Image 1 (cartoon, helix red, strand yellow):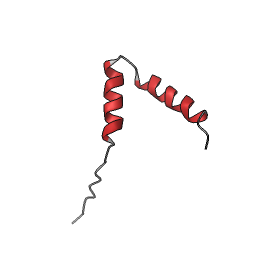
Image 2: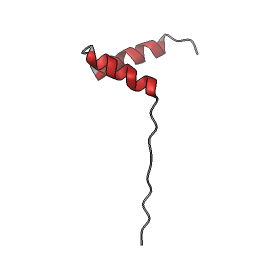
Image 3: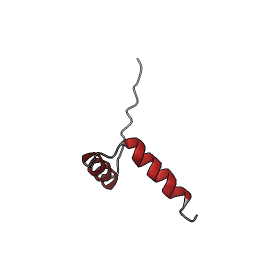
Image 4: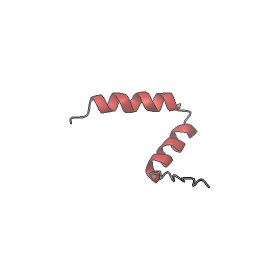
Length: 45
């Protein structure tokens, strides 16, 4: 008898809202990724 492991993912509601808003503005996921990568390079550690 095998046991299955269920993994529940938790998402941040603010991130979901941000992505949905961006999609409504016709901003692609690739554009969001590029923006986040660019922003992280310019943020002091």
